[in-house]
Length: 241
Image (cartoon, rainbow, N blue to C red; front, side):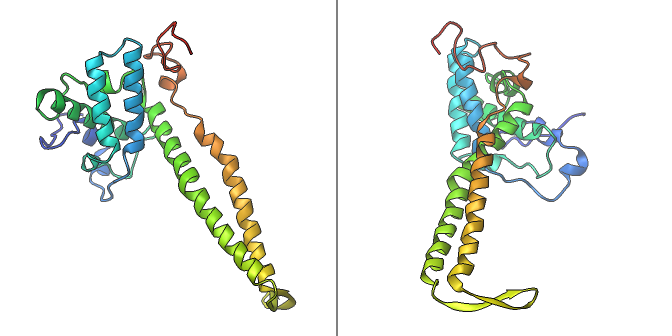
């Protein structure tokens, strides 16, 4: 792809601006998404790789420390990607890997960025693929938003409308159908229909939620070509389950 200039005052490296084609790099919309769900797998994976004897403890500690800083939002300005993504989310994955490596190297040497002693591919990206971590991050984000925000919000709306339906059950109003007056009903009956629709919405959300709790992150493309056989189990061979 030729030489790529990287700002010295940032943690991310050459793969971040280089992954996207030039016409996308010049597009106007940047993707300032929350990076916490993308960094959590890196911290977890660093611990697993260390447990399996693949990553030195010193490197693990640096990777985990930097990943935690990304997760808590301390390095939010280091994610300048635009909304356009490759199918595998490679630029997002490498953006996170490079920021973690850059910050880890600064923690270790006092010099920001670079690939020593922590390399974004060899250490941060060890035992994984963008095809695993990016969909895993999306699953974590979607499952969290559905469970912690969407379902509670829909349930709160449902309960508020149900309270109105009960309170207004005695208020008679004209029904409407086909743009004409129809059989009378109560305002409470009308609102009970909204409650029933939200009950159905909540049921559908709870049906789809388990699909997002199954993580695709179980070793690169599930063929384990560059991951330890016990990587998906997250334990050292021979250790208790």
